[in-house]
Amino acid sequence: MGVEQLADRGRAAVVRQDWSAAYKDLSAAEGAGALTGRGLRDLGIAAWALGGDDEGCRYLGEAYRAFRDAGLPEDAGRCAFWAGMNFVYRGHHAEGSGWFGRLQRLVPASGEGVLAGYLRVAGALGALYAGRAEEALEGFTAAHTTGELEHEADLAALGLMGRGQALVLLGRAAEGVAALDEVMLAVTGGEVSDIPTGITYCTVIWVCQARFDLRRAEEWTAALSRWCDRQPDLVPFRGECLVHRSRVLQHQGDWPGARAEADRAVRRLTEPEEQPALGMAFYQLAELRRLCGDLDEARESYRRAHEHGQDPQPGLALLHLAEGDAGTAAAALRRALEEAADPLARCLLLPACVEVFLEARDVDAADRAAAELGRHAADGASPPWLAALAARARGAVLLGRGEPAAAAAELRRAVGLWRDVRAPYEEATTRLLLARARRAAGDEEAAGLDLEAARTVLARLGARPDLARAERPGGPQAAAGSAAGGLTAREVEVLRLVATGRTNRAIARELHLSEKTVARHLSNIFTKLDVPSRAAATAYAYERHLV
Image: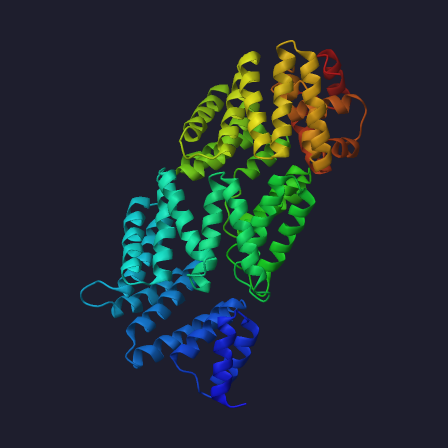
């Protein structure tokens, strides 16, 4: 086959998204020196689609030079932009900045036109990552306007996507969501090319999940899955797609399926080289391990998530709480709240803050967190999931303040909202709180029904720590409340089991902890109670009627 035929066949394969065939034919043509700027650009895209980021950037660089030398500045500028974006998304900001500098030199003296629009996207992204959402909004809006005027679909999509993201971060959720929905119409309608299509899918899904709009996240995740499945050899976005699917399955109550997808995502994002979304995949895996009671494995996954650039909060704080260390959990969340400026980041932390601060017996701090969450949920554009979180938080705080009747009213509302959005785990754990409120209000029959309903769901899910909590309907705070010596709720549980004669191994198995963690709790108990042995600790437990 002749070189020209190879090049033509390779370009046809790019159009039908057959990346392996495109790369094979175009690289063969390139080896014979027959590729023009367009062919080099297509070869760069094919290499990128197969996971070869550095190779893709190299070919885009060659395409940039070919277009520039041929007197085609707009085509050269597009190549410079996408090479820069590739480097920036991988964390190589200096190299990305260099490519954006080349793009800037191609912008007309008037400062207008397509290339000026792409340059505005690059600047707006930098502002967004630096926390300057107002500046980012201005840049993205200008880029979107330019894309519309110049009939440049990719530029218009990137500008509108960024505009939506900035608006949501600024608390203007209704406007932001409308912009994101609009850009997704262009993406699903095939108006946008492959690279910005993948970027838009992943960005929009991330925003939906971050603001608890799980219905939209589920809908767009299904669309992303279909797009990825049409390209079996596509590497970018496929791993991130698996993370999104894992979260959807988790919320739907299919935890084995969610864990399998998270494991696949870690593998996919590790090979052929580590991808930027790997930290997100480790965090999702950590969450599932924590919920199932595999605390040591969860800790390691949170560590790996942090290692790959993903903030491990609030999951890591909830892990500390599961281990009975409410103090460490509360300190971590206070630090995280201080650093979280935008509404999305704070809403991700606030539900955990309420739970942790109550366990740390800081009811006032829990009340403030619940009130802030309620203000975010009161926004007319807020999704039902956020409203359910806010109602549960208010109910938990009222219960902590000793107002069981008012707490039960809020918790009943939260249970109904969870049922409406089909969130079995959240409904079950809220029923545990509702059972405590109803028992405190004297309604034992209703409390028993709620406990039984919660136990059934938690057992099906495999939520071992929550199932263990369901067996102690008074709640860990009640257990700790009668104990002196400053013991945490978890330390009270360990002390009770020590007093029954259980070994560290047996305690670890019953509480779903490691033996090392049990030993640490026991050491803390000895220190706090100023006792020298298990026998002395057992005597203390019997004296305080903890057994």
